[in-house]
Amino acid sequence: MNTVTSTTLLELLLQAGDSEGWKQFHERYWPMIVAFARKQGLTDSDAEDIGQETVMAFVQSYGHGGFDHNKGRLRSWLFAIASHKCTDVLRRRMRENVVCPETSGTCFLDRIPSADEMEKTWTNTWQQAVLKACLAEAAQEVQPKTYEAFDLYVLQDWPVDAVAAKLGMTENAVYIAKNRVLSRARELLPRMEEIW
View 1 (tube, one colour):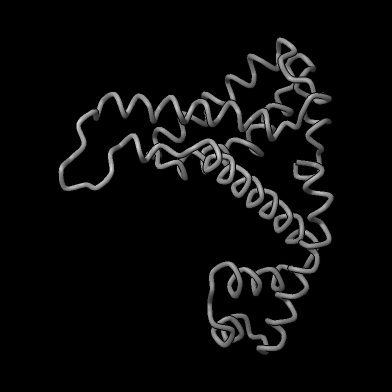
View 2: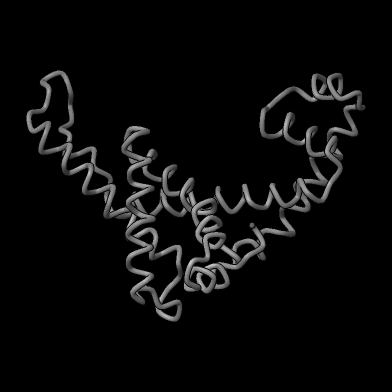
């Protein structure tokens, strides 16, 4: 899934009944959209609704020729849809909570992220999703024990001695596993950024 370019994926979506294309699109972008919505302060339920609404808006617009790859990146288009959906939910909340509590120094209106804040959050969320895709690809290319050492030491923040003891490795082997996975992820990053 990670190696299919966004252009190829979009072409697959145009083929009538290509459920695999839609499945890949959903698996790639829906979790990222939901994570973005959560970072805007929305509940899990609202964030999942935003993810669904964004994908549905994309489906409707894309099916009618609403996206032109020559005029911009898919990332920018999805951001526009997702940020608009988030802002709608936040404004709806604002209307429901017009009165600010006296114990709070800020009003709900002040807590709605600015367009710049939303764009920074989107960019950060997008970069995290691309990095996750790089790590998933790297995991396929190294020995399972190497990736497990990397996962425990780097992603789960275990102490190096605990990782070494759990996996029956030397501490130096854990450091080598970390470097091997990170080096491969760095090599994959430019290609993965282009793909996404």
